[in-house]
Length: 101
Image (tube, rainbow, N blue to C red; front, side, top):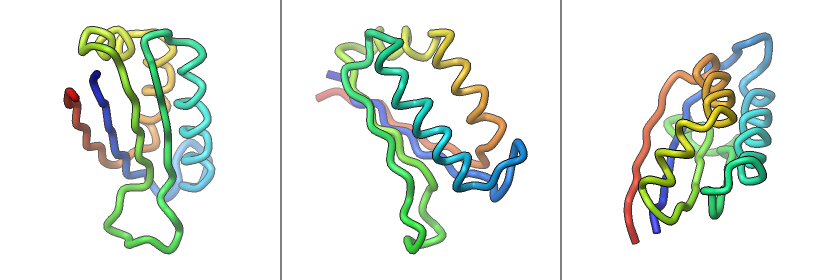
């Protein structure tokens, strides 16, 4: 099993919306991908708590796949690319790790 974990920092405002609004949009859009991309075995998106340290990332994405090839299919899927395109417009930072268990 491959675990794919990504963290995003968001702009205070982007695409005409606040950071909080964009975080909710991203959470909803990413979590909906499980219904559109069969290679996703599990997906969970967390939004950083408002009173957490300012040095934290704003969003954490946790997802599971059977193989690294499935991760590649996911990343190239048109629906993932659509969501990633929006994230790219509102994020300021990104960090990711893929590991096998």
